[in-house]
Image (cartoon, rainbow over all chains, first blue to last red; front, side, top):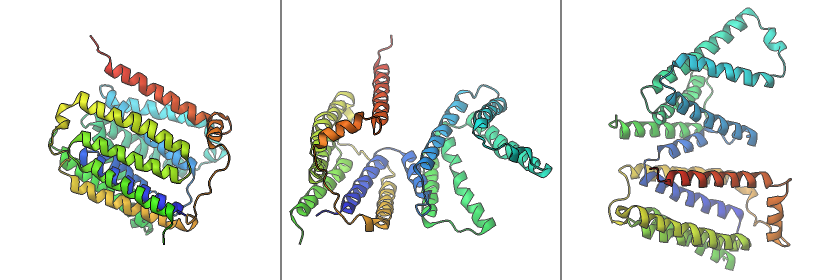
Length: 189
Length: 169
């Protein structure tokens, strides 16, 4: 009689050995970042397969955005950003169920929407495109991973919601990987 | 007192872990590939313990017979310097050791969280498992779509490797 959990513990040990092999033999910062992101996902909350799939797709999409911005760095950055976001808007428009909520917005609602769109999305993407003219794509994507760490910090400071221990572990893993990446590769330019 | 299958489990687990540690620590890459074969053989033993005879055979034929041999060929044909006894680890191996230990503790913690539902042995399948597997892979209600997606992925990898190896004049 072999309980199922024994197999899982053995798999975990084998995974750890393989992880050590990948990390020690090559400079595979990306895998460490993956673990960090994995840990930041709290297992106590009810998760769904669809949500994880969407998160995975958005990660792949972000990687593609980074690569294409780097490829198109000779072009005018802000116009590419405008074009991309307009295309996203038209692509996402059929998914909206109820337009009455948008049409019924008050003046302050419109102001907040415009502020969020132009500052949070527009400005950050323009800065990202500008940075990609100077930095390699992997470096840019690595540094931008600080952003999901800052979100729980801001929530903690403003709303006093304590992040889970696994989230803190994931944040430590990401920060450590970024520090290591910067220290190891700072002399390559 | 452990029964016979548990003894077999511990033996194969020890084989897997010891040879896996050797895979990532020995300096000669051909030796590492040979230890990888031992690891894969231990996993095949686990499949036998789980009464998945077909998977065990596939493990031996595909992984040991094809992939491990491919590794050895690739090492021998491409990089002669990898055969030397130079240091194969990079300077941040202590960090890697810490991270993998952290990953082990994290995964064990997660497994322990729902271990109460796992203190049972999975029930063995009855009937012709090979036929059931074949039907599951080709049934539209089950796994035909992932199966076809995987075949397209392999085809893309095939074309990509041919393109990379193409000798452009």
